[in-house]
Length: 187
Image 1 (tube, rainbow, N blue to C red):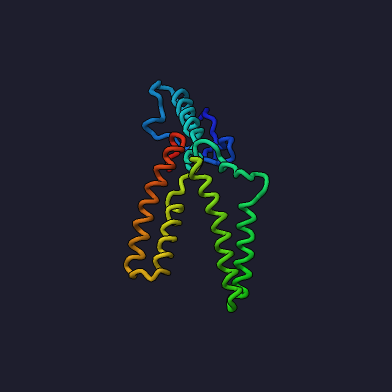
Image 2: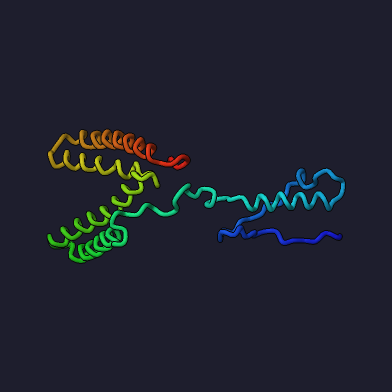
């Protein structure tokens, strides 16, 4: 009866993420001292220690810098402008999709938007910030498939060559990322 109750549930951890404090299990609730007061305070300390541990997204946060590495042209938003212009060209191309100029606008919009994403992926991959092996390996695979398609290669050769090039590029890009990635950052 003399115990003070405390509200269980959300425990602020100081980093803006709310966590749930788990109630101590009955087997760990008492420290064996015989008094309810000492056991409760020990369980409370354990519960608050567990609540202070990072969980979920906070535990899986990347090690090292939280932001991607800066581009060489840092103050100027070149990548963002490429993506924005690409989006504008895509919308304009969809509006004029029935004439040849509209199709050219669609292709140019896709190319500019893809270049913006590719630049960011290359920068993050080769500085060790994040691994983009599969995205970067898809580029040479698609290029080889396109060349073989327009060269009128046999139908079966196009996907087989694309898969082989993708696998080789993926392995090489994965090794390159592991060389530059900090310890614990291999992803």
